[in-house]
Amino acid sequence: MIKSLIHRIVAIPLIYDLIQTLVGAKQVRQRLQRQLTGLNQNAVVMDIGGGTGLNRALFPDHIRYICLDNDPVKLSGLMQKEVDGHALLGDAGKMPIPTGSVDMVICTSVTHHLLDDVLVQFFQEAMRVLKPDGRFVVLDAVWLPNRIPSRILWKYDRGSFPRPAQTLHDTLSQYGKELHWEEFTILHRYIIGIFKKHEVVS
Ligand SMILES: C[S@@+](CC[C@H](N)C(=O)[O-])C[C@H]1O[C@@H](n2cnc3c(N)ncnc32)[C@H](O)[C@@H]1O
Image: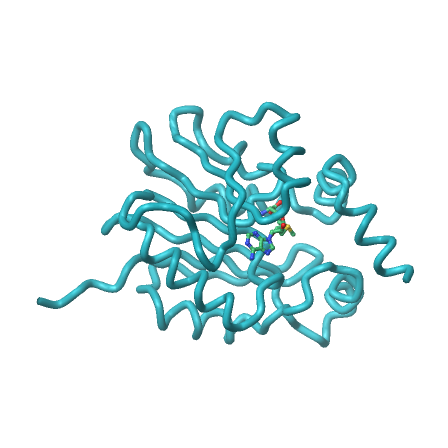
């Protein structure tokens, strides 16, 4: 009951953004931003589970930003903020996006919301929509039960499927070729992974 009340309050876009600031999300995003360079003029960036569009600020003005989320309340929060980009209602496991059309798929704090089968569908979809030289960037907090702050944060987090870093790494590596992997701690334990499509040998 208390947990569900907390979830309802946290779902309010303004409160959600405030909590993100309090739990150190700004520092985490700054770390992520170092990995997001080299996008061409008019590059298309898909932010999957992009929520209220906080990731838009990580990119230069010239990119085309699309925020896909399955929660219309989050997307309306994005539209109220007049974020420079498009809001798209859809599911991470079945993206309404043409094959090979996206320069970067980014996804922050989303994998822990997805069941194993949806996670796999999502990784496959991310690789499908990427251009041949596109990049798939994943940031998420991971399951590390011996850290007390992690245990407390996971207790109240809405996402029910935190995974160990190794599990995420191994699953991602099945669907894409690793370009970068790092693990770090800012209150929570996090991973940043960058993958590209596997090369097709003809
Ligand atoms: C913790 S929030 C992260 C939001 C944003 N990426 C950020 O870093 O601020 C998780 C987001 O994933 C979205 N989400 C969860 N499951 C999803 C799914 N199957 N398809 C699309 N979005 C999903 C939620 O609606 C929510 O906006």
